[in-house]
Picture 1 (tube, rainbow, N blue to C red):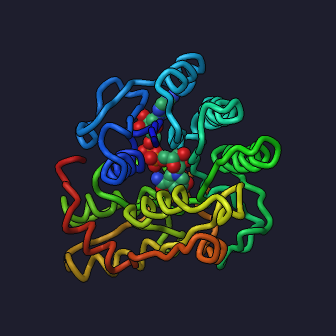
Picture 2: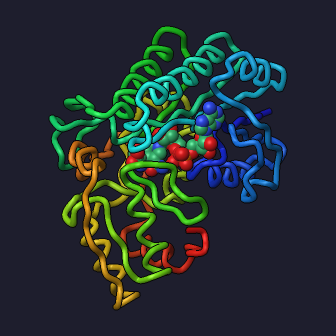
Length: 315
Ligand code: NAD
Ligand code: SER
C-alpha cells in the first residue's frame, strides 16, 4: 500500500501536487505537511500535519511511525529569497534532503521525489537548448544548493540504492497559490496586476528569456516520473524538463491581445543578475526518451487560462 507524505505542501507546487496525488491514490493516502500551523484551504480535503523539516527527530518519528512509503520533499527557499538569507537557505535546502535520503537508505522509505531547478546552470552554461549534461557553475546560493542536492541524490542511488527521482523544473506558472520568492515569479505576478489594474512593473528587463511551464504540466511530469518503472529512470541527479520559453515583452504582447489597455514598465533589480545566469531554453530529450515526457501547454494556452482564473483580490 502506497502512503505518501508531501513536505512543504502549502506552497505553489505542493498545494496542486497534493490534490492530484489525492485524486489518484485516495484522500487518506496522501498526508500534506508544512511548517505553516494552519492547513491551507486548498488542501483541506485530506490529512494535514504541521511539520518542520529542520526538526530531524520529529520528521524521522513521524515518517517511521506512520509507515510512509513515498516522500515528496518540497520545502526550500527559492532563488530570490535565498539570496537575502544565504546561510539559512543552505541549511533548509540541504539538511531536509539528508534527513529524507537517510530514511530511505535505512529502509524506511521506498521512493523520494526532490525537485531541482534550472538554477543548477550558471553564466558559463550554453544558454539555448541547454543540454542535460553540460557546464554547471551556478552563481546563486539556491543554484549551488540544488546542484549539491542533485549530486547527493545520485550518490545515494549509486551507493545505497535509494530510489530518488528529480526534475529540474523551469519557472512554474499557476493561479491557485501565489509563488514563493523566485526569479520567475514575475510571470505569475503579471497576470494579477493585468487583471487588477492593467499595468505591471516588471523586475526583469523586456528581453529576458527564461524557460517556463504551466503547473498542470509540471505536476503531471512529477507523477509520471514517480510512477515510471525503475528501469526507465536512467538519470538519478535530475532530468531537464521543458515547457515553453518567453520574455516579459513576448508575454505582454499575448496579454494585450486580451486586455488592450495593458501596459508594462521595467525596473530590473537584483533578480536580473540571477535570470541572466540561467538558460533561455532547455533540451529535455532525455526525459522524452526515458519516460515519455511531453508538455501540453504553450504560451497562448497559459495566458488564456491565467487571465481567466487568477483571483486579483489575492494581491
Ligand atoms: P513555495 O515557496 O511556494 O513553497 C515551499 C513550502 O515549503 C511553503 O509552503 C513553506 O511554508 C514550506 N516550508 C518552508 N520551510 C519549511 C520547513 N522548515 N519545514 C516544512 N515546510 C517548510 O515553493 P514552491 O514553488 O512550491 O517550490 C517547491 C520546490 O520546488 C522547491 O524545492 C523549489 O526549489 C522547487 N522549484 C520550484 C520552482 C517554481 O517555479 N515554483 C521551480 C524550480 C524548482
Ligand atoms: N522558479 C524558481 C525560482 O525562480 C526556479 O527554481 O527560484
